[in-house]
Image 1 (cartoon, rainbow, N blue to C red):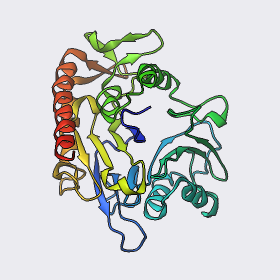
Image 2 (image 1 turned 90 degrees about the horizontal axis):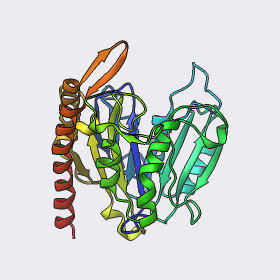
Image 3 (image 1 turned 180 degrees about the vertical axis):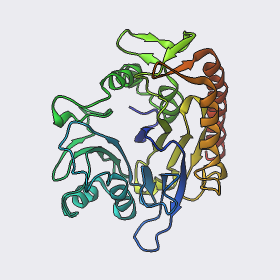
Image 4 (image 1 turned 30 degrees about the horizontal axis):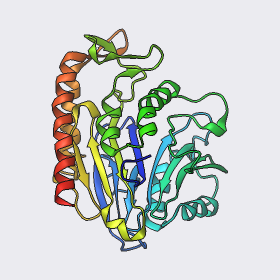
Length: 320
């Protein structure tokens, strides 16, 4: 389904931790080095929220709200599990084994998305004691998850955003031309609203509700995977930090992280703060709801999208 046949793993991250950074963890106490996204408060880089390692294994999560809820005394362990996976896993089956051998309860309620360099991928819908695996295969070459799990039955959150994403992806699935820039600088900048099938980017003011990018979105990251172990050095973590319509996508590799994405003395990273400062200029609150000054935001987003696409082009030309 992708333009060049390489797997993609995308996370449009919603969180209360709006300032993030990217860091590399060396393979000093574990088999694998890796790069990943962290909250600004996590100065020791202990809880990864999306990343990939030097073996070609990549992982992300979405919070689920219709699986068995973990107890208040042991919850929100997803980031620790993903750090453990990045440090130790090579394949999707390795992650399966990790989930089966970690002490229970796991302290999670999540959809873990994974890909490896052997052509495998899928989602593990996981709670404290069990998981259901949905593999990528010929019948399901693209899998979308928001904030509910298919195995959880009714309930959950994010159903509108799920339909938004599926609708926007459908023509690209049909053409087989899904790319990382479609995700970071297409879907994560989109104001398509599926309940009435309209694009709200042409409005003057809109309520921030059920779009793919939201006031609570801290990053959009698409990991461009490898088709084989021999191609792991070609992997890229395309990183759009901050509120996506206000940010610029930059390439991260296992060996090179742009300076503006690194943790600094101000907390988090420069790119995250700059994007969110622009976000603050186009959002305001009325009657308890965030509202967007859409013409101003569209100008910012269009300008930064052009910068992002330029970064994609420059990187690819240099790494032909």
